[in-house]
View 1 (spheres, rainbow, N blue to C red):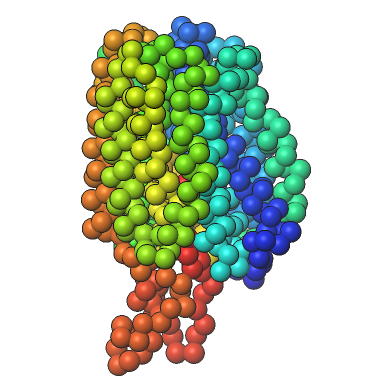
View 2: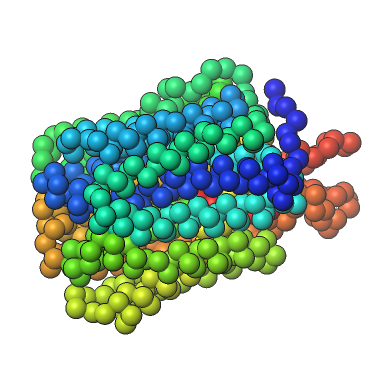
Length: 506
């Protein structure tokens, strides 16, 4: 059963508490994802870890996050979004503490998996709470502000991580999450509880298990296959992953309460998620390798490598909210297309960076152009996804989009080192890292160009029009065609439209 949701103004006291909680909670997750990238060389040297082990430090987290995030969205809709959000913050904080004290790379990977479980509970609730709590006219600004601030947290990760590694050790990069997690738990009671549309039946545990097996099998094959390990195990893992993926689709199609309701995939929702998959694979590859390249090939300290990406942070802070409003005013197609091309241009500039180059002449132009493109993409792509979901399904819509983004990053981290020839211990060899970085970034740039093509040919500019917008020329016989602009089913005579987001990620 669906309860009536709050209708809160963004600038009210409750609206400010809402933004504080959601930004800090989701920002904690996104901050951690980039902090760890800076710490990878230090972690590798501390544990004498191979490239494969370092990939698992990233992939273990992304694996549990991506495979369980849909379940997290369903739990939020069922049990209460704030409640599940807070539970995720607690688990994530405990996982962070376990990472900080891990005595071996194996235990560090296990703790990262625990962090991913917490992130899967926490991440989908942040956007879903904003969608469900804020009044319709304030949602575009709320989501734009959330997107910008969490984007800043993501971009600040390298700088914060670099400082902590230089001042203390790589372990401090995980300890930063402890006070943030405590703050989220302490102030969450100021946010109204909301629930979503819940189908009858229990939780889709089978779906969650199959999703985990599918992603784990494919990831294992991508990471361990190029390392030349047990090829039989690699083949079996790949086969298990593919079969589990097929079984997942079948189970979701026939489940009474699916973790992933397939009917949510309208044309625009599907298009936006395909774009997310492509463009976030490109992002994930760059964020994975850039700060490591600066340290290993150019000799930057962890702090200097983190500071090198500061222009991305500043651009996200200044322009993300404006990009969201621009997309609502002119439609998302042009910002998404242009933004993807600008991202690609920034990546092509990164290919020109070589050992001995100055920061001002080579690194700064590349990261500045890349950051400008990022600001044009992040808010509009999330707004497009959520505009296709009714308010009651905001949790699952947010979870699907986050899952797609994490799967994209997971596969980028698993596949790019093999493509770039950075297997074994070649990750730490400056010449090999330079060549590998150039190859990997070129591949990511091509992905960004593909993203621009996808955006231009599949994204509808009408997607961000308010649901109440009527197009009298659209319905048969002059009937107001409420559904034409929003992709919703036609209304029955006398029926009231469902409350739903009207505008404006991850």
